[in-house]
Length: 484
Image (cartoon, rainbow, N blue to C red; front, side, top):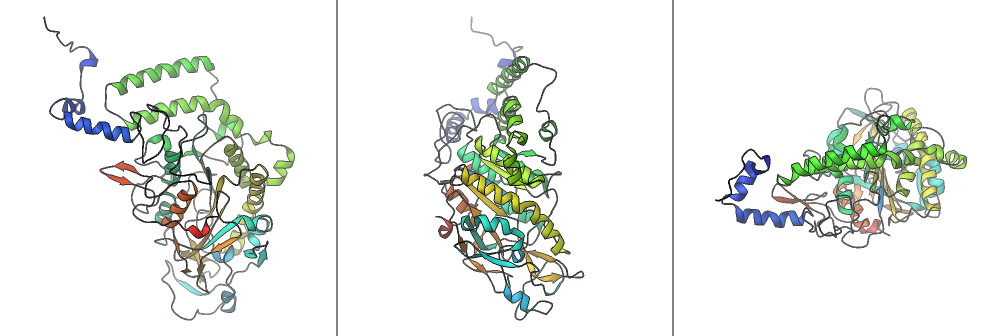
């Protein structure tokens, strides 16, 4: 007799997707095989990358880029809120000449009402063999490392608003849901440490503006999203929630995890590929593996007193010392934020606020770069400093003690990882309002960062909703002048 299907057996049940795949859509399913292979879901390759051993289902397995890049890891020091380029890395003597007066010639539209010119209250000085001028706010960084910095003075973005500018800087698009830069990089390179996240975002005191959208993976698999750490805490148990388990032994946890994994694998076997389920499986495994290594990595009390003194005290010093420890352990992309909200957003009282913020960072950044150089890490670690835009050369009304948002021109700097040290690229106009020489859009910055990591930004793609997406969308050019 022919075999009778056991309809009470759940394994014989099919979903709508499976039914369509079996009934009249066989050729479509054959096509799907090619798509899955292209995304390493059945052991193929993705975006022209070497994705490791055939059949590998580990999304964080180390992978090779398109070509040999100088940078292997990235640290993004994000000064959220928009630091003033005119008071940090872009001196403008003409502003002092017109201080308190109406600026001559055409001006650019500002988001809020502004008045007369506001000359920088901070002294600028030339440092190093390169003679790059830096303000007193970052004197220690400049004194020790100006010849390691590649200062881009001609950055520009799209709009003068925090939310879209944050999204543009972090995700390559100011409006639509897109994966973050850290997610793209971990997607492309994987991670050198399977016991820690490949992408970590540290922000003390809570989330910044637009919160987790800054480190989202969007349509990339969930394993590539950033792991948020609230670095206002110093106790490991608070810094990393649920890092310990005081109820179950490690062996009991492993048994529980194996059971959950078996159930998830059984669930996945009955259905077509489900990224959310795979991300859930990976997160369970990572959380288990992190218990020992993460606690050790984030514990800066293990550092000698001389190293603690080098970095100094305070949250930013602690964040950067943790960052160095994470780099040593192979974490691929680390984003270090100034704090929740918009700390650098000084619409008034910029003298006091910028001085206070810079004091928290200056010694720590100088120590961090020194530490990386001494350990031989700076050559392979690309360090990025900057915010989502700059600030206006005119004072904002009514207080006249601060600056409005300025996306027309601002400064950022790169160090290490193949960036050209001791170099100034581009310029704003003589008053600092807009990028005027060798302009660099955020898309260009992203293309250059990927180039330093060994990627052709036009080929690092992910197919979603019928098209190939990339970090730079349909824009971007590599700024070869900043590459050493």
